[in-house]
Length: 137
Image (cartoon, rainbow, N blue to C red; front, top):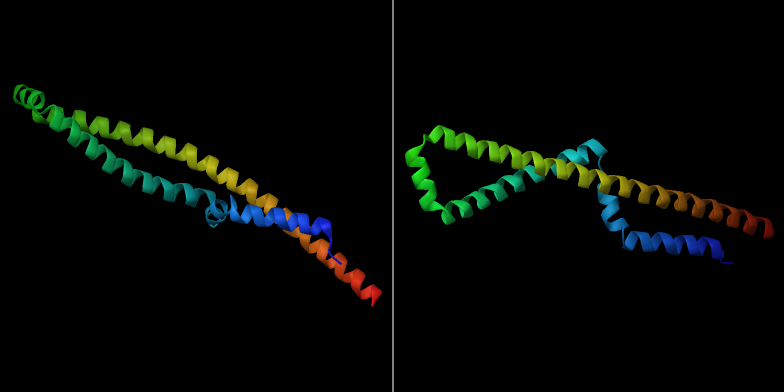
């Protein structure tokens, strides 16, 4: 005989696995610190590439003004300005990364806790049903 409660829980679990679980399960393969560190490394690489592209476009757009400023001022000062902008950009990008991926990890943890609680319920209901079947036989 089919247990309706067990079927309902299993349906909910299958729905989770097909939807949010696809994103949550890979996240939970890591410890929180490792997951966030990995994302920060990826973020550092992508933000460095983004900064270089933005700097290139800005430089192409303002090439005349840049040449005048470079000729009038010294190059180390201009280089320091670019370096300060780069560091500021990276720090901001990394802060955003930590906030976003911390929330994502927390959300995945909550989803997986519910999933495992449902899994335990299903196992208990299945054991209960098996005991009833053995008593009936």
